[in-house]
Length: 108
Image 1 (cartoon, rainbow, N blue to C red):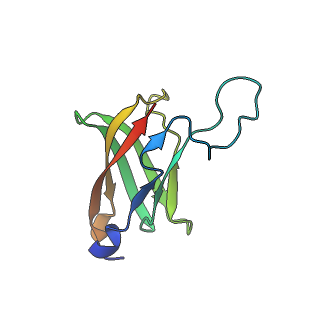
Image 2: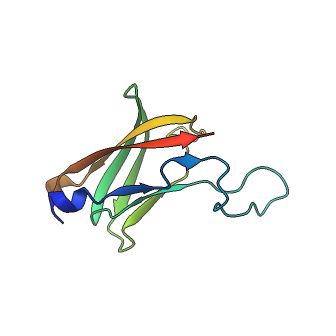
């Protein structure tokens, strides 16, 4: 993977809409079903850090070398709380391969 390949990293869906019709149906009688976004086209091993626009760390995710090429984020903080709607910054650290910084929006 090269620096050019790092630019292929995407977040889908972006923006994330809280009531998206494509989400899996809730298997339970109440509450909402699972929520997640995917970081795609990742290098084999990397660390993804998600921050608020104020620079506060929200969550850290790891791509462990699987061949799937993506990591799912369940839209929960490192303290296991639901994230608030808003704009978030992500940083993908591919070690020797470089890094990528991007934005993801979560809409209510």
